[in-house]
Image (cartoon, rainbow over all chains, first blue to last red; front, side, top):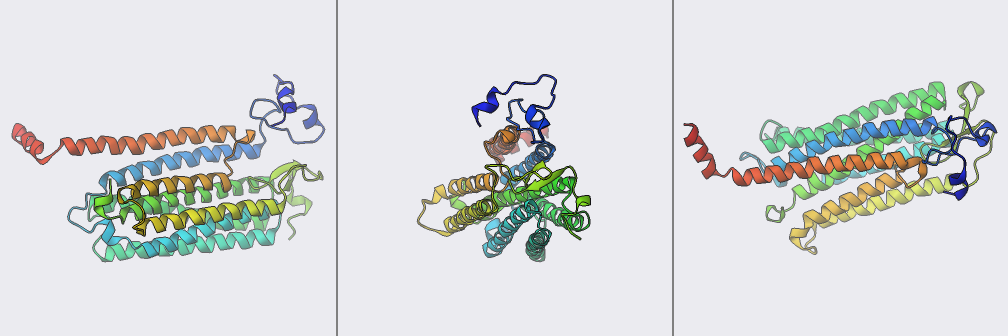
Length: 228
Length: 145
């Protein structure tokens, strides 16, 4: 931040500064100078607050899982159930989809419709592949008699990982509507703001998955004597 | 259909940059010191590479004998937190930029809530488990009976 901005006079009436009047966007400093923040910043902030509340909801599911982890009620334990090859594949799919989602946002920045749609389509395909693997894993658990009603451990597992899966499903549907909106309406400001929220959502889902694959799958398959 | 046609534009033109590009007045050139395309792509690729390395490190650590056993769970937690930080910086663009001051503060509050919920639950429930042994359960049943 340059000292020039700090010395810029504060305008108590909130009127645009000379720079804004001259056509340049206001330079927000986070210290009140430069006028109100542009809508892009405000939209991103609002959605970020929603995402954080979503993360807090997930944290309660993580807490329930951590508390109930050992309550297997004589049923199968995490170590007997989890297949780390499947988890590694799911992680690779979701990580790559986060990259293609980022590339889509660059393509939107370049106003390149073709690459936007290609990158979004890749993101969607990777998301669907992830969901397929997850549903297959859940089905194999249920087929082995380890459904959500088997034990407190499995109830908390299905709630936590299933909730993430529901979010990914919602994200894939949202992604489809974004592709349709870019196709039909182009790179309008409001459409780009919706897309900004979508990218935040998709990247946040990947952060939740990082916690799931590390703390649920990897820690869950450690030998029991090594667990705290 | 061309995305550049005037009807699809509202008041602002659009240029490359973080947060899905920045608004600028129509017809104005890219701002000096903006983010060129190459730098943008490299940023995402660098974040992706670090995330992949941390993921591989996590999966390797879960299987290795080289790390002191009882430290494995904490080590995996540390790697997960590190990877979440990488995602926040490179993908969600949570930075020290003045634009971002509110986002960082909201994140700090969110982290506080998450820590309270997770560690508070584990702490309370562990103590409950220790106090509710089979013997004390039997005493409780006798008192009620």
